[in-house]
Length: 271
Image (cartoon, rainbow, N blue to C red; front, side, top):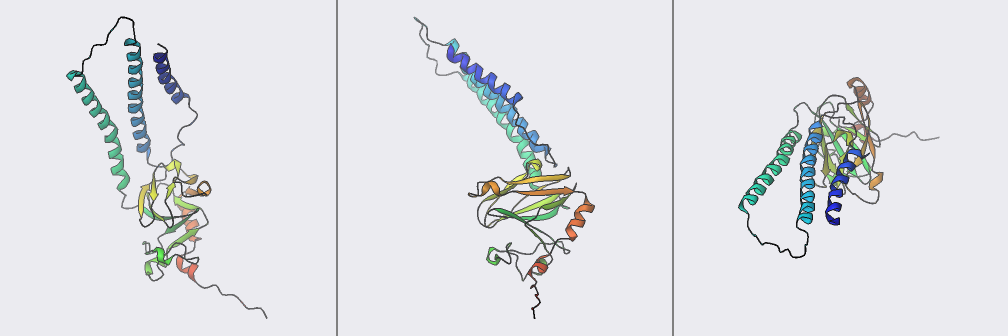
């Protein structure tokens, strides 16, 4: 009897904790409300199944508890029950997979007019590269990484000379325009994650991964690394500033290109 009560209280406590919990999502600031919807659908399906299974266990513990003089009847097969369980499980799995597959298709289908931004992760800092006037990012290779060229841009590629390099500063994005994030890690596994944007993707050394989103809310948002990348993982922070296009263009004009950063600094000798 006591076990059955405890199982029922676990279900009730779980449901109450969910509705009274102070922890929830941050307000969304991108087009990926579909991700929230998919998570909610999955949560309700798994939550209902969890409650049904645990309450069924409580019922069985109570209904078939030990009683003096009673004997259990062994019935190894129940075709009707097996069919209902198979059908119910199949419907539940399909209900959880289908929304996710729809969202995933949207997630990997980048709009043709998306602005390209490269994000480079390195213990324990973020750096960014944007296409210049030619609209193309130059080639990069880890063999070119040096203190003078921390992003590893190929100095012989003409498309990379006008690339805008942002290091040690916040990334700015235009409001209401789709952005394709190209993700590259120089040393270990990282993950560029802005909770308000919802979308994220691992940054794998030796590969270039990507995702896209459209900022829908102006403001300054925290950047987190969503992978355990080392002892300084918690300090790998940054900011993304989403602003109207006029302010974004003004900020962009103040940034330096790769060619400007590689130009030798002239110093005047003192007499």
